[in-house]
Image (cartoon, rainbow, N blue to C red; front, top):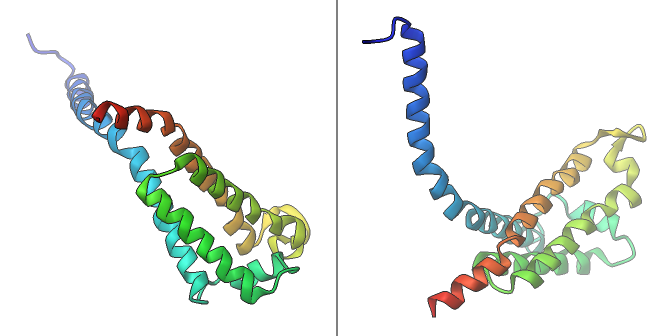
Length: 165
């Protein structure tokens, strides 16, 4: 006998459909999401690094002002080359422990702007009122979180390569 409540039937049918989609999608996402995250980080690092190398980065002046004790004509392209190297290593998925360590060093270095240039990163000296530059730096917390997730696969990737031999 069919249920007398059509809303309940519709809800049950919808949740049944969601459960079927989950059974397909969740295993797929588990297989690809961390690799996709690693590749995304690599693309961002290569892209931003190349912008610095070719002197077209919108943050070159911010970098130069933050690391004011080094000649901007040296620090900006060197930082760009560093970022490209880290990005390529992320894309290749090689030497991940070293790569992620270098990645985190660079990311933590971006927070120097809050110490060296608080007038550029905070509005009216208020740490809760970020400028565009401040927001640009704070979003690196998301990149750091992504790198930490990628870091959880270091041993798993090594074990998978060993098993494939």
